[in-house]
Image (cartoon, rainbow, N blue to C red):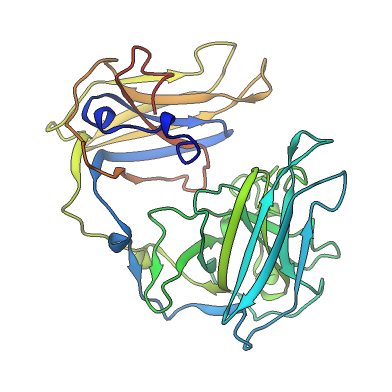
Length: 365
């Protein structure tokens, strides 16, 4: 990672000499769709992060004495696991810090879990809500193994809970009142059929509604938890609380921003020809297609398991020329996309840019 070794990071010269831009659906099997208005660059800092003022949050578990529950930690309890974590309740928040490490007997990362202590506890009725929301801060926002879980109507709350990934990034809004990041996870992102080795869903809610939370499950929440799982690394979360809320497209944050500078758009102003690559070797069967409609490109496809590898392949949409010319992005801090998607839960989206390389597809950033 760039955070571990600056030699793999983009330089200012790379930002100046962008020669190719691309999108990928890779490493995660599933249907995908992106409607892309354009690629842009901009300069952001913490002062420009989205700020949200929201009184719609209803508490499930907080640490201020109002909705309190005892805490239980589980750190790699079996098979010689060596992950470890600890927590402190300070003020109105719980600070959880640890390290998810590779289990020697499995040669794969283990897990740390912080959850409410009782297996059959009582939490407020979340019937009718659309999102389980966390207010958090983190010293390790780049850690990619965070998950949140809730159990309901089960005799095995740890391993038959509903679980979903969550991430903290530059687009995560900040709660105006508390200054904490507001991470809203749709209930449609949760599944109770997930791998006990990785925590990732075996069957997604979007593919089979039988693994989705029901309104009865939202009513009967019996345990809440956080996980650092399936990704080796140091982690930290400072958690103000678990909440539920109802969001729809009308309440999604809307940002008006004139600081976006175009790299590649589809309106004829900054246009480039498009090239598709769908699993070109080893018998891959992923497929995708695109249409340019109005000022946007609509890209739809399916990332499928490559039979010879028993692992998902990839689809790639990119600018056609390997050595094209794009605007100078020197001094910018972010590559930004304006997109819509019919598959927002798909977890395999990636963006790339190539610069100063003779192998732009596989030596891109």
